Image (cartoon, rainbow, N blue to C red; front, top):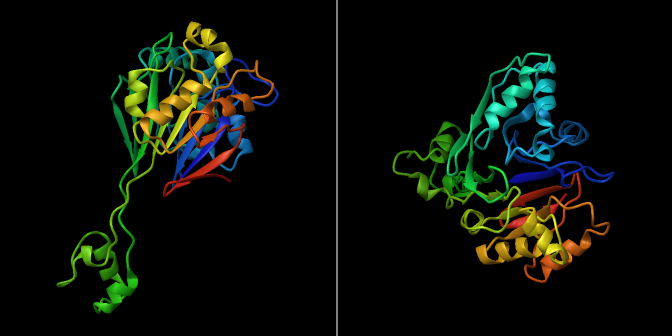
Length: 303
């Protein structure tokens, strides 16, 4: 099971209701952040997620609304006594830019911090999941990201194990770890392995091949929807997408759910974006700041 927390869902400038882009994905106790706009650390403090449990931060591009919350968050982690390592990644030029900001901010980072520029199709491994980059198309160097859970072992059938004469204890663990106990193999008491969930984060982008290829059969596609179709030309001019374009990608790629984010403040009633998307793709969500969703076994729900 994954939990997706929308810390910030706005675009370009904050409003009274929406802060700058930041999405947290929690797997077990580990948290990944995608983008880290202004206000992200305060949103984390208001949520049930702990910023001290963040193990990786992935920035899509260097526009201020996606990165200006990062230096403060890194320093707050240090001031709060963090000792665990943290990896922070972004596109070409990201490391130089972040190091320049940190060099003029008073206060040392007292934990192992790895800052890394990524090319497209690079993967960073974590315990139980991985994050991979893909190419999108914006007006500055930019990436999107794929969060992919590892396959998980099937369920252990305790009753079947007992019917084979296996007693509770170390032998249960051996069977669950794929070993055999006497003539009883793991396959005889374990259900089929289960495919992990996949979440795709588009970043700021126009519709493009890189995003389409990355989104094939995703459980969740988190897609920017800065504009409505009424402002299609503005979307093209600023290298952004409309809600309808996001829905078309979700439909073409066979995604199970579409979540619209990075919405412009020009729309007082943002429900028009969801309505436009739902004319094309049925399972559409329009998260507000601090909305959290659980993703498991082909089910996505607001909690």
